[in-house]
Length: 260
Image (cartoon, rainbow, N blue to C red):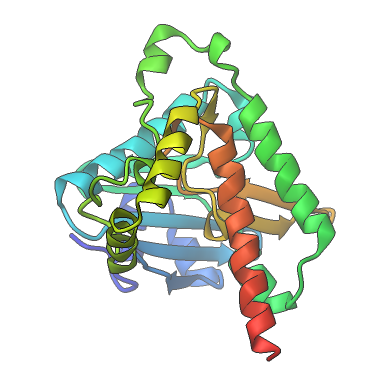
């Protein structure tokens, strides 16, 4: 069964994550925010909600990445400093290949936030840097057991191997790889980067504005959480930092062009 805004209420009722009173008495709103996966925001009231993710296709890669995210959430239960930086896992369903996590009703991802405010506030950038630093320090590799370490694949970012694009790669990525193969100087520099890749931290692996949430807490103070843990691994912490810097550069370039 693929979820829709129509049948999701019945599913959540059957799993016990919604009560009849939630449907009848509350201001229940379900928003389809699907992209690569089927994603739904279920806003029960102004302070409570659920986020439901279900894979779009039942191919092997999609199922593996979904399972990896579920396993990541379960692993973080043993590391409170890590789990505090992400939504709580509420449920996962192997049959429907879905998971349900905590939703912060007033949250925006950073792409949405910056588009709304049309600025790059320093305090938000500082908060994001603090959260990423806390994440990278939250579980030193020396504190992990052998079985916990075995969860991580220890694979450098695929773009540094640049031999072939994964099946899920976009047309733009494939075009980039064709360009790299036509430039021996760039290939040589990519080889040097590959040789310098370090396995020194647990990393998110896909940090960008879309995967960073910002929202006010009960006291009105800004908080940030990191989401979408499908590519979590042991690797080079600089990759996470670079992903965020890339989001800032892309926004700044677009902003400059809009003024011309």
